[in-house]
Amino acid sequence: MIGWQAPTQGWACLNMDGSVMLSQGSAAARGVLRSDEGLFIDSAATIALLQGDQTLHPHHTLVNSIKRQLKQQWEVHIMHVFREGNYVADYLASVGHSIPVGIQIVEITSSMLNH
Image 1 (tube, rainbow, N blue to C red):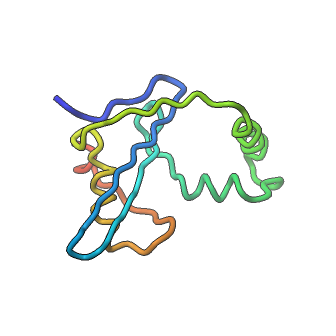
Image 2: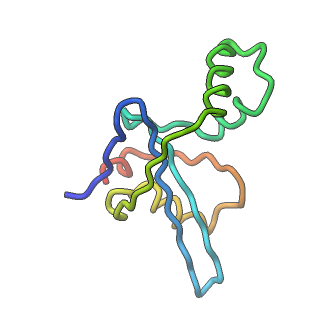
């Protein structure tokens, strides 16, 4: 059975997919970031947190640690995942044709997680 697989412990997984509708002259791409426990990582909030001055944020020590880590060399693995194992990203890419350009927060329902 093909399905989403969690990354190795300590890793995060970015699943992305694209969609093209030639009849509309439209292309869209979306992605979803998950932890090794399968939890969705709110990338919009994360980006805002990492781009701003977080001196007064209650977790500023952690945020500054992440900023330092982002400057390090990374090991990245790229691999193909069938649509059936990438259902959430596939869904987001297909609805992306009707979503305005930019960072969007979309509610994920439990029925989507069963794929």
